[in-house]
Amino acid sequence: MARAPETREQQILGHALKLFSQSGYRETSLQDVADQLGLTRPAFYYYFKSKDELLWRLIGNLGDGLLEKAVPIAESKRDPVAKLQELLQAHVRTVLSNSDAFRIYFAERHEVGPSRDRRLRRGERAYADLVAGVIAAGQRRRVFKRGEPKVLALLVFGLANSSLRWYRPRGGLEVSEIAELISAMAVDGLRIQSP
Amino acid sequence: MARAPETREQQILGHALKLFSQSGYRETSLQDVADQLGLTRPAFYYYFKSKDELLWRLIGNLGDGLLEKAVPIAESKRDPVAKLQELLQAHVRTVLSNSDAFRIYFAERHEVGPSRDRRLRRGERAYADLVAGVIAAGQRRRVFKRGEPKVLALLVFGLANSSLRWYRPRGGLEVSEIAELISAMAVDGLRIQSP
DNA sequence: CCTACCGATCGGTAGG
DNA sequence: CCTACCGATCGGTAGG
Image (cartoon, rainbow over all chains, first blue to last red; front, side, top):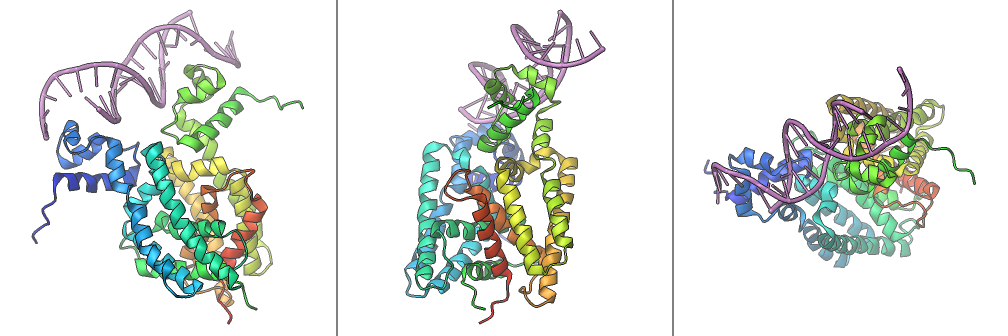
């Protein structure tokens, strides 16, 4: 059972991930993090510039990860319904596979400061525009309901991200089951009902 | 234009509501609240026992309000689809009409301490069970999709509550429009698709 | 990475 | 006894 040789930096990131996710960024002191690792608080500053820097390392590139997976799906040649379904499945899988980090992201987003906040916001807008574009394409084909595509995209993200509120690894439902449930619910919710 | 004679207590509650909602509970000091009202921080303690007490006054009975409106709908004689639609419309209207308070509720829920947290949890469970019961009734009539009713209820709440993330009063969309959009999306998302 | 600290600010309380 | 506060400061903890 040879453990991967974790660096101190990785240990700090891992423990901070758990603590920030469970108790919040402001509620968790660097002393809490240091205690769990058996080192002093000042030692932390050998590895990270500040508490802000630690937070940014945890949540700064989550948006890029989502966008990377989404772009090829949105640019593929499938129909809008299939695209949206695939986009949402990928979204839920990514979010729930990194549930601690995304929980921190959504709860502590505002703690990163104005310039980084703008950067996060740009990423979010690009991602939302991508999904809104797919929804708009489905509306033009008369398969999705009318309504502001951007608002519908935000609602669909709200549905998908809400799984973070109750999802727990190894708790009844698998990530893939939740991803299928949510994507089906979102796509059917947007579909013009036939009867 | 005679303003209602606002007591100091109401003034404090109103300003704390805005500040906690905008910047967070821990991020807002009692000094910030006091400054906005032109009084000293110790004066605050004449009106409230503690910062915790202030938070509780803002979010402690939001759940009761939701439950009060939901019970008569759930107990009415309508079919499950109509019940769910009405439940969700009432939910969204209530939540968005008190958007600052509910934003605080969802973001700072954990700050109220263990015993009050249990109380909130009990209220949430009762409310979720109510909606899960309506969903289960719809499943028995083969109008709603299969799946754990409790999970489906949580997803539906997630969709409804996500509107708090982007809703702003006097911004394009009316509360009633959002309520109808969300309830239609949720009900159709749960419906077994006919074609 | 530790010991020994700092400037500031936190929530909360004293007497009047 | 009540109300509506004030100036000063408490013990602790924050990030650095």
